[in-house]
Image (cartoon, rainbow over the protein chains, first blue to last red):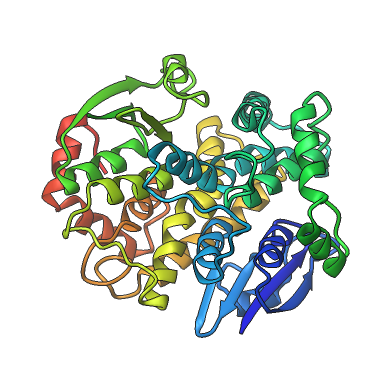
Length: 207
Length: 207
C-alpha cells in the first residue's frame, strides 16, 4: 500500500497530483504547519529524520525528496498519461533530466529567500542582493524553458512538470508572475486537469 | 566529444571526478569566479542561460544540474567501478534515488546561507535562525545516512556519492565538520581515490 505523508500547504500537493494522474491507490495522511513558525510539525520527524514533506511509504520503503519520489512513482505506477523519456532520444531525455532536477536543485533556493524575507518584512544583506539577481534570472529561465509548449516537453505532461508546477505556483504565491503570462497560463492549464483538481479537493489547497 | 565547463572552486570538481572514474574522454574548459563577488563569470551564460557550473556538452546536448549530469554520464559512460542500482532491489534503489537528489534538493540551501553569512560577516534574521536549525539537522542526517559504510550504499562507490561528497566538502570548508569524524573520514576516503586525485590535479583544487 502506498501512503502519502502530506503537509499543508506546500510541495506535497504536487506529489498527490502525480499520484492522482497515475490513479495509484493510496492512503493520505495530512499534517499541518505550526501556525507560529509555518514550519512542519515535529511528528513528521518520526516518519523521516528531516521531517519535511512529501514523504511516501510504499511497502517497506520510506522515501523523501520530491524528485526522487517522482521517479519512484513513475517507475512503480507507470501510466501512458505521463511521459517519461528514456535515453533513446538523447535531447528529450536530457531535457527531462534537467527539468526533473531543476526545481529543487536550483529554483527553490532564491524563492525560499524571497519567502523568508516577505514573511519577516525585512530584506537584509547579503540575501536581498542575492535574491534580487537570482529570482528574475530563474523566472526568465522558466519562461524560456516552457516556450510555446503546453508542458515542459511538449503537448503531453511529463514527470518533469510536477516539480516545475510547484515552483511556478510558489512564485505565483509570492506575487512574482505578474509580467509573465506564459507561466500564469501554465498554472491555469495544470489546474484544469481532472487529476490536479482531485488533489486540490482532497486537501483543500489551491494552486 | 564530451566537454566539461568547469568553474573554480565548487561543485564542478565532483563532476570531473565522476568523469575520471568512468575514464570518459573529455575536454575540460576552466572558468574563474569574479574575485570581487565570488560569482560565476558572465561568459558561462553563453553556454547555459543560468551561467552556473558544472555544464556538460555531449554531442549536440548541453546539460546543467549536477544530479541530472550524474545520471546522464552514468548512462552514457557506464563503468563497473561506479554502482547504479535499479528498481530490481527496491530498498537499494530508493536509497540511491534519495541520495542522488538530496545534496542539491535539500542540503545545499542551508549551507549556502551559512556561506553567505560567513562571507558577509553578518547573521541577519530570519536567515540566522533558519540556518541555525537546519545546518545541524542536515549534518546529523548525513552522518546517519553514511552510518558505518565506506560509501553511501555500501562498500562500493555509487552515483549518489559524488553530490554527497560535494556537500560534505562544502560543510568542511565552512568549518562545520569538527565534531563529525564520520564525515571527515569519508572525505579522506574519497580523496584517496586515484580518479579523485586526477581531478584535483587537473584543476588545482583540493577537497
